[in-house]
Image (cartoon, rainbow, N blue to C red; front, side, top):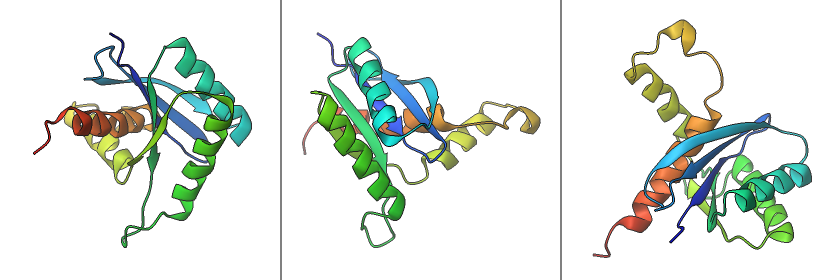
Length: 142
């Protein structure tokens, strides 16, 4: 049975994309898209999701310290709306706070030298977002 999910780390310049294994257990970086427009980004995401036969899309969303949707989080909401207008795949939000920092930290922990850590962490951040979601749905209810 296919339980594959797509994770999205939306950004103003780039969109990180991660995909889970078919069991919906382990997230892996997939690719980074350059931002074009919300409509075009949504179309490309739906195309990727369809090609990979995912059962759900998880979009990172930032919240304020008070738990309200942030300015960037509202952009995630608009992307979700655009995806839902052209696709049939369910879309869920997941708190993306600190995903980029965690991505940078993971590269440090892997022993990657500082000069080689430069670059984009978008696909790794998407992986962290997706893995958090996958972990939350795999835990048995208390």
